[in-house]
Amino acid sequence: MELAPFIDHTLLNPDATAIDVQQICAEAIAYSFKAICIPPFYVQEAFKVLSQEEQRPLIATVVGFPMGYSATAAKVEEIKRAIDDGADEIDAVINICAVKSKAWNYVRSDMDSLITAAHLKNKKIKLILETGLLTPEEIDQLCTIALELRPDFLKTSTGFNGPGAQPEAVRQIMDRVQGKISVKASGGIRDAQTARQYLEMGVKRIGASKSIALVSE
Image 1: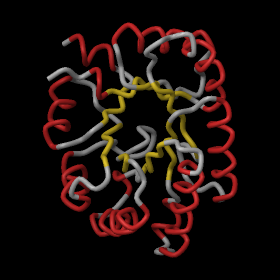
Image 2: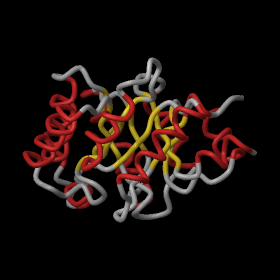
Image 3: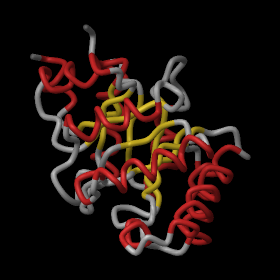
């Protein structure tokens, strides 16, 4: 199974430079990765580099990253700005604090606002659940809300908090959404065998910073 068409080639280091982003863009073109995932600060830079390409990778960026507990209005403005700068896809962190407080009305409103902000601009949104910090019951409740609101993807993890993608959590999400929402596994995926395991489970996208190593194995 060819991995590259499923990979979001990711660079989210806090010390990433413009040169690093230019390199990520060049690698994504060379290896035909599905998308790059970069800090909001560099979306304009990536768009400038990639807009000359006939078949370019998608540009994804993060919102409310990596904690998710920013005010909803702030995250909505981040989405609008990122899209104006050239982002094709948004990877937005849900409010995990609200989940832990069982403030489900707030959680639903937050998710709804983020999805609406992206969809009004005809862009895709991946909601990051941070499954490594959640109980199975919390994951199930988030899937229930997501099935009502219909984001384009549910993404397991930021890669910055908790253990990252885990087979048990991925399987739970897949079983719960039944193909009605796509799933992105992200965080700690460092070898091709693990990536293929998730794809065989039905995952539609893999987030990885070690993308070249994955496709070179």
